[in-house]
Structures are given as C-alpha cells and as structure tokens.
Image (cartoon, rainbow, N blue to C red; front, top):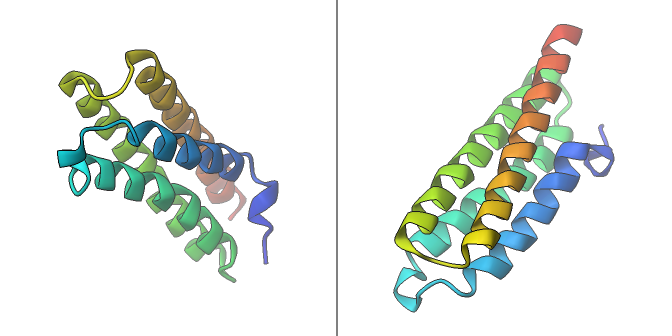
Length: 119
C-alpha cells in the first residue's frame, strides 16, 4: 500500500481542509446547512479520497480516487467564488483559500498524469 502522508497533494489538501473549516466559521448562520456545509464537505473529500485511493491495491483504483479528489478541489474553487460574490468571509482569506485549492488541483492533476504514464 502507498503512504498518503508522503504525497504533496495530501499535504496541500490537509492544510486546505483545516483552513476551510476555520474560514467558514465566519459565514452567516443561515448558511450552516448550505454553502458552509457544502464547502467543508468538498474540502474534506479531497484529502479523504487521496487517503482512500492510496489504500487501494490496484493502480486504476488509486487513479480513480485521485480523479475524484481532483473534482472536489475544482468544486471547492467554485464554491469559494460563490462565497466571495456573496460577500462571505474576508476577501483576502477567500482568495488565499482559492489559491490553495487551485494548487492542490494542479498537484493532483500532475500526479494523475504521472501515474497514467507509468501504467
């Protein structure tokens, strides 16, 4: 099995999810079951799918979970753009989170490409 803790993509995703949780504490209370919940679930999905994929025995399964993680990273980017347009949170914090999500997606994309080339 693979050690997800050694992956740069996991490190980035782990930091991102913690930062998303911190930032969304300041979102309006009426968004608790809306955008706050969606954003948190998408962020934690990135790291969770990297972990689950690393635990799979086959390379195709591993890549599939990394692709799901990539999709969740793109979802976080979009949800952050909604939060910014609605005026939730501090603009600089939302931009920093968006940059983190984008970097996570880029690293995941590179890892997926490298694994596909390997097979």
